Image (tube, rainbow, N blue to C red):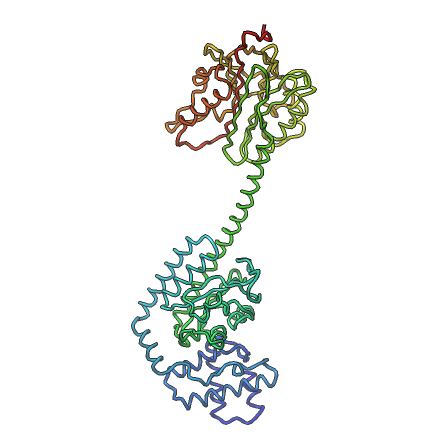
Length: 553
């Protein structure tokens, strides 16, 4: 006890005073407290003096004992060992509890033996764990924690702060003066604290318990001295319902300061050592829940950003598709596009070639989602850029395959059907790179399949994709689609019979009517089944020429 020895040598001390200081320091040593005095020993002082009072010390003996300890702290302050004495800020001579309060506290403790109290605390921890497991965000974590803690230790008022540096909650942008903590949650506040939107909890500077936490002196639940925020509220005529004290438990994660939980009481040291152990254990649970909640909040924020980005991507992708069908005398075109996710690997396109003919496309990337959508955009761009110089559809797809194999080493592939319509001759020339065979329904109901003329694109460097031709007679219907349509299932697991549906199409009603008929059949067939793949299709019909129309003679 180097400080005590120096104190004893500084001036003459009577035996009673010296024994009082020695007794206090021995108590500190027995409770693993620092040997040297500090200016934040107020918690230890109140705990120690309360112990003496509950042991039955009379008022005069307790007064003399307190004065001796006060003189010791004054000497430590005057000699520069501490910046200030706890006695400078707090009145330790005032009775902390009346005898009635002490008897009432002892009565409350006496109602429950140690086993009963332990069971209540374990039940509280179980309830807290169950509640925190359901808490998705930081605010809910604290709200549930305050509710459970207050009910378990039979108190009404509680509040919680998080540190600004924890990143658990956004800092306030307006209102009270900013400081190192953010009010996270509260319950059962007295009117004095609750008024003006919890002003006396939010205002700066940091209160005593927050300062202890910031200085890393608060590492477990403790009974704190008079709450400076309750004092501040009372000094401004706030009604605090007799609340003056609170216990505090720190919220720590890997030695990182996250926040603090306070539970308020009328009485100093209303909470027993068992209660404080319960609060400390609860603080550990809360810190783990906060980390989960933080990860949840981060994931929700990321998900929100991703959702917005995907929605923008969908808008961009949809803008790449033709917005209006082409106007071609004697023909009608209609199309539909349904992505299984926000963005798709399916696409369709049409545009007029330099010689006046029209080129029609459909493609299906062998993947889904954003990667497939990006690959689709690249394929579409290659098809549009290479089409004017290609002599026929087979050559176009062969050239596109060369570019994909050369530059797009992504592991993805694409099937493409490409057709060029000669409207005057009533004929299409086409190439099919591994795509589902389009269905050509003749006017009498017979269905022809336009089988692949080469492999899908992007697999092999050297491919030979042939060009074929097919006549389009009046009232014929060409249905071109991706496998999301042909592979669709009903609730019984049966596959959508597309050829049978196509046989019922007639070009007499036009492309739009034929498209709606197929989509309607599909919706009725798959009712109740979630779409598992992108669905894209377009329909080309040729109308019956009028008696005066000589273009087809």
